Length: 220
Image 1 (cartoon, rainbow, N blue to C red):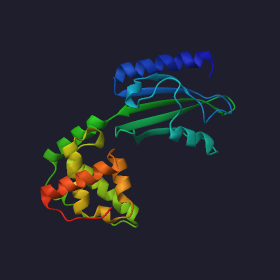
Image 2: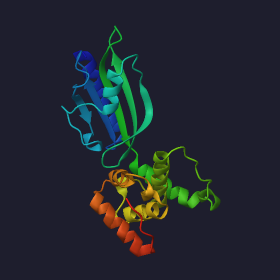
Image 3: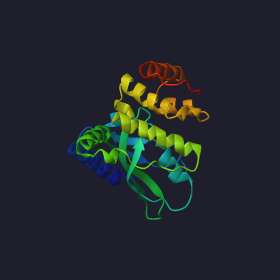
Image 4: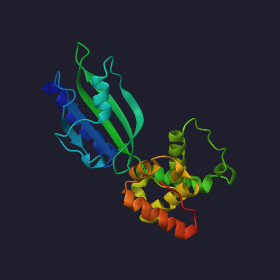
């Protein structure tokens, strides 16, 4: 991108970060022709949201969009998640030159983790008893079933993984054990990764949950 565009994006980034606060990360990538897969961050505001800095590479989503071929389309207001479990609402704008080639990426990542927690808290007061007894979802494969059970365990706790305490995770994993989630092949690996714990810790949490409820022993 030329200097005029970078100057504009710098001022825009600072303005948006100041307007929406420390939970709003703004990222600018300057894409060099032929270097889509190694392009680095040229500008970032509130990088603590994703833990990135100037010079770090783009997200996998950006790399995929730039390398899969065809027209590159902007993505507006979609959800992403960081490695430590933060929930983000993201927007990605592709900046193109006169020939239609992408020469820059402007991204907004807003950390809504605490907003999601507040939403769950409000729902616990405004929801009815019947709303908690929704019809079970019919899934077409065991992977979808495991994903659905994990989502249910998070709803049971009432907060996203990034904000869960040890006791919260034990509660979620106890639910998964009681519902038979660990009867699914390799479910232990997926659950450990999702809750950002080791496989050893997962075993311990399962044992702790059994002692609390007397749950039956399931294999991993």
